[in-house]
Amino acid sequence: PYPAFSLCCITFFTIKSIKMKSQIFSLLIAASAILAACNNNTESGKNESGTTSKDSSNTAATTTSSDDAGLTQEKPSFANVNPKTAASINEVVSHYLHVKNALANDNGEEAASGGKALAASLGKIDHAPLQGEQMKLYMDVSESLKEHGEHLASNANKIDHQREHFVMMSEDVYDLVKGFGANQPLYVDHCPMANNDKGADWLSEKKEISNPYMGKKMPKCGTVEKIIKN
Figure 1 (tube, rainbow, N blue to C red):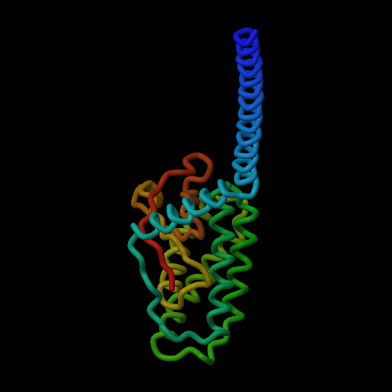
Figure 2: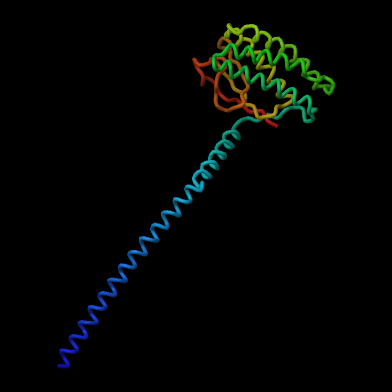
């Protein structure tokens, strides 16, 4: 009887051990599944919380900074500009950019509107704070700028004529910004085909080329030459 009893005991404990191992194995599988689900949720949470967008914005900021760093940078000549004068110059620049964007879109009516506003803004500049080189620069460009603004304003249906005056307007605005600065960085762009293939420059608030001389016919013709910023 004893051997039989021993065999039965061994069989019983063997079966029980197998069952326990099976249960433990099942528990391990379940725990692994739960852990994997948690990890997936954590990763998903990271993405939804903006980790990806944060990385993208950092990359974009680095790229923009790197691109501008490769350009020749010019600083305005005048270190001390009266705040009222600076605000008036900024208004002139704003109307100039209005003209530039209108010509890039082949919109003579908008270019005329911008030219009229630019001419009017020149009459609002307070001359009293201007002295020495600042006064000289303003006097050198103000009358010319006003004339070009008026020509653009009176030729809404002659966009080619507007563009002829925009060549000279851009030269005057460049001189103005090079002296007094502006309330924003401005890119100096060049088109080799403008002005009867003599080439001409313009100023832009954005680095992307949008050619005011060629318009929609050749919108990307041109290169960024440098940047003016304080």
